[in-house]
Image 1 (cartoon, rainbow, N blue to C red):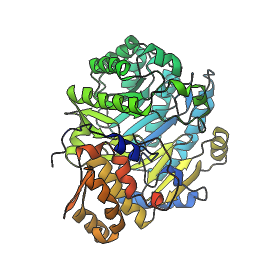
Image 2 (cartoon, rainbow, N blue to C red; image 1 turned 180 degrees about the horizontal axis):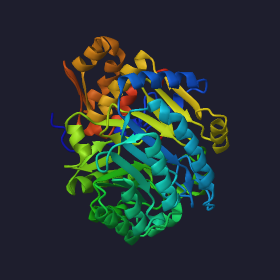
Image 3 (spheres, rainbow, N blue to C red; image 1 turned 60 degrees about the vertical axis):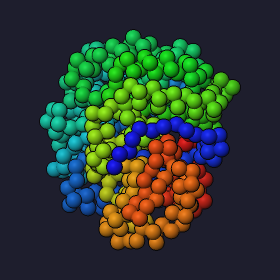
Length: 462
């Protein structure tokens, strides 16, 4: 099926109707529905079952520290200039690795991702120690065969650090840029030169990194279509393999640092939409394909190829080519996806430390998925990754009649059909180019928790 390239043809009424808060569906159910009464017995039972299935593993390691704060940030982080803070944290990661390692004995780790916070808050020696710790407790692939990635703040690394990361086994890198405009950078407390960013990108290529992602954010203070075009032009010159272009969610009630942003400086919804339209136009013209959910990739990138082959997956780090893996989250607030459960570590550093010092897994909350959850997760992941649903495939795997099980959902989609967002046929549902831009809204139709009247959470979908 030819998915084509996206087009922007929104009218004001369509924007007003669909510009609502909604999940990003890095999991289903979303993390907001995890339960505090989830216990370690459940996750250990799921690990035992997953061992029997012998699925490959993905590891996510959360490093929460940042030396400075970016005012837009909604990540779980600890802002400190005290580099010694990492020492105690690494000691407790050692304990957590020692608890998890034996539970997954013999499983191959095909994917690693370090996120944060700022993983490069750690010194080169500390990062080297952490990768050695990983190899001690888990079975990693030989150099170059796995997908081992790290989030980079270009302000915190030099050429020697980039080469050192390559030597540790990292072969993918994600760089935060957000915006190159000096006025925007000052307003969000993130001063980062184009030259510094270019040096990191060029060094990464020389050091053998096979994929480089750049993060941008639209909707920040003082942004306009004109200023963001300059940023896009500069980023395109860097020729990253992938781009993530996120919608800034201004939620000062939840994130206190955002209270330092003057809301009068934020672009209005119409300007944000124009910035988004410009972004898609410029990136697709430059040879990037729109994967969905703010992600773009070159036509020959593994992400694009996986989507064409219907092999794309989505997890807490975004889109992934490594579907079918169990994800083990390590570190404060990290989330694991093992078998049919999700489990999240303590978000409080003292509580995270206390659980590990007691010899316990630091799990604070989670959820055991029901049969209905698993079915709806597959439907939503199919939509968000492949932009279609094959009725026969779902019916064969779950023993249902799609049209009967999802009668009300198909009825709800009727308006979206009339608006040109989706097409419903005898064999399945296909998302149109216009619908690709509103994929979160379409997924929400199949979200039982949204249907149950739970308040919509998350960033706005437009």
